[in-house]
Image (cartoon, rainbow, N blue to C red; front, side, top):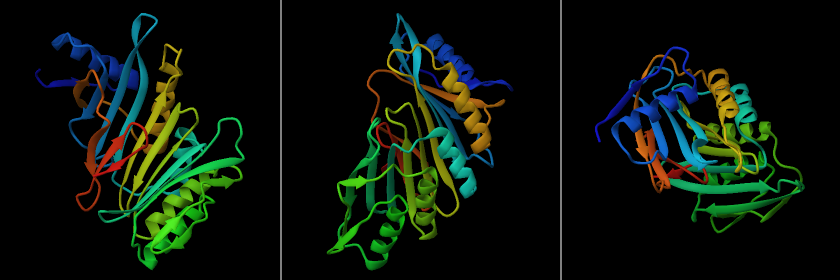
Length: 284
């Protein structure tokens, strides 16, 4: 199939661009429309990479957009206030994952989640590298403590209790964890979502730039994502400075089984980040 290029209008919304891309796909193929990936052809100074992804599903006899995501790279480091507004608008505190890297080495990956009804006991899942230095252990503990997670050291590894008693972390705590990782010179990634997952935000941050993905998913029996698309557009504009505008977009249709991971732009040191359907990022 030939490369598909579409051009958005000045007042284009997210669903308008998705509909334009869907029509362009159907003009060239009889394959079912599955996961539509729409990537900006020309980068801008503020957003070196911009992409929109829409997952279609059949409901009530017609195809509807079940999940809508906006993926952006920001050329400048955001402020604490900007990150707090983004996470509050697009994410949640019921489910938080944080991952720290030093260069190409992953130090620790911790997930903290709370039940949708009882929010007094959180469950922690931890993956930690072995043989961490004293400085690396200290940096990990410093970041995790922002989320109220206490870690203990043993033979160069960190151990985190399987349960955390108390309420979920606040948005300010999630921002503090990101900032502490950045201040220690680490690559820090954070995923925050509601439970059940109807809205989520993924942030990857180094000393100079930020990668971000904001996502909305409609409930199982819903047949329209229009309200969520408007909310995403407002978040992208207000918190991330992004508008669809008049631009050229490259369109692909990943019909059938979706790949678990897909590559995104590098961020410093040639590192590639692969956003994952379930968590946020698989480091490559």
